[in-house]
Image: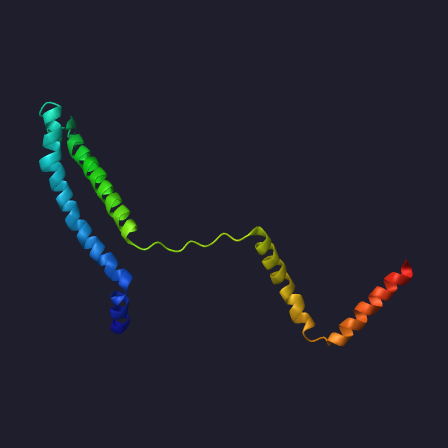
Length: 147
């Protein structure tokens, strides 16, 4: 069981996921620091020195921390934008997958007909070709006589 667990962990997808989670956690700390220490003070300069983290609403014993929520929204937007830029850059670097060529409708129709006739061909593989010639000749003669 331990061997299977080691094989599972050694797979590329699991390791990639683990690295992504660790880097994501570290990146979140950096973005939070950026928002709290640089962006919020910068926004505060333009809107009169207001610090978002101080925005609270008290109703009885309950405290609603709107400023903290606004900081979280700003952090999310920054993280989403940076992830977008990273994915866009990686997509430019990575080789593109070959797209499937569009199939001509006539070719597709012929392929469908071939596939539909495959069972008939298999059923006729046991029949002697001379028997088929005799049947075709008899059918043609019967049609000629009925005219």
